[in-house]
Length: 208
Image 1 (cartoon, one colour):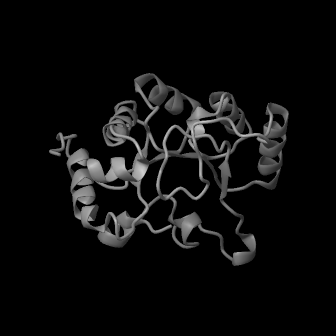
Image 2 (spheres, rainbow, N blue to C red):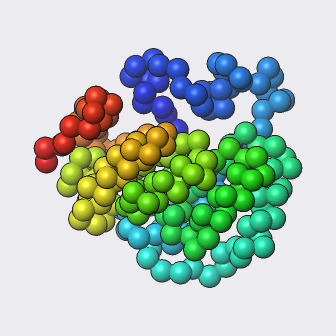
């Protein structure tokens, strides 16, 4: 995973110590490092992304962990003292006990981050994510307008992702954008960076 903010702007980021093993708070030696855990808590998803590594769809999949098993996973991760837990999917916010799972993880002292397509994060959901105590929310943005919608397999996905980003900002939740860069969306990269700058300056509406 490449941090474009660091790459383009050479601005230090809070997670650099975990991602690159250097900077403030980084372990003194490799032997002291522990893994950031990415947990795909469900395979189910409300979109059909052309680049999906889990081949997810809007249906229930057999064999997913029940609540007691989820609790045991969290207990093990907390005991191991991992530096961060990233909840992903599928679309993690679809998980029937997403709030409970995240709240339990926070109660065990785990630092939580979220990787989401953002389409389900309305004002209420953004406030709940903030209340639970997520350190960071990463919302996928794989292009501007139709490019993103094509990647995500659904018209309107771009508008909902932008709305989720703004809903998180409105409640003071730290949020950023992430993308899967390929030959299909490389031409949108400058527009994505422009979008980020406009959002920082006050959320000027995009022109399609």
